[in-house]
Length: 233
Image 1 (cartoon, one colour):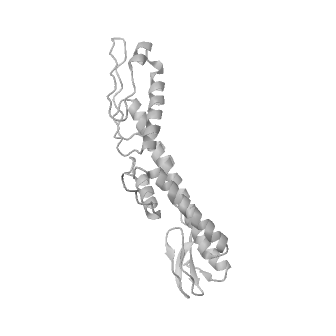
Image 2 (cartoon, rainbow, N blue to C red; image 1 turned 90 degrees about the vertical axis):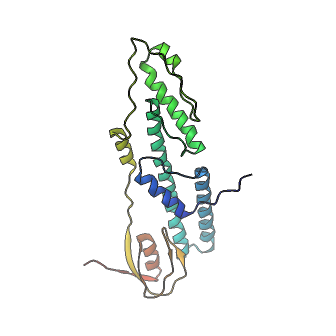
Image 3 (cartoon, rainbow, N blue to C red; image 1 turned 135 degrees about the horizontal axis):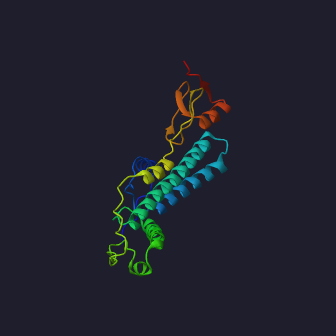
């Protein structure tokens, strides 16, 4: 029996998101990707709820909540980016291209096969009845498709699409949202316990000056633990 895979970490999640965002092809991911993401989100949700019960007004609670929200956001973006790329792969497959499928998880292979079938059926709407019966969708595990017999009155198949084109660029650009960080600078007015923010852990002492997300900074300011610093020229 194979040993269980290591738990996914917040750093693993953010690294995968960056790779998916900067490339038009699927990033290499662990085969239990979706289960690992679900476990990661369940763990941070449990930690947040426990801290919320123990000390709802703590800066530690605010930091956990900020990280929980960011994890959920990155997770959904990863799913959307990979889904968009698989849709494009299925469209190419229906048009005759051979797609590398080794980076797909089992869930993604099922999704790819389903979309490929729909795309192939839709493209066959203008084919003759004889041709539609002869065309069979290739199996994603390696089975070769049955080539339809060429009739003199049948159109020649379209050449495989190029690797990048207007359709792909449009779909990819629609998913490429820029990360926005609403950061402010504060000066800490007393020693604070170590706590976690969305992207890092904070170990702050009196008179430290630090840049952090606005929501987290205002939680400290409102509790009298820090003051805003105006850094405008």
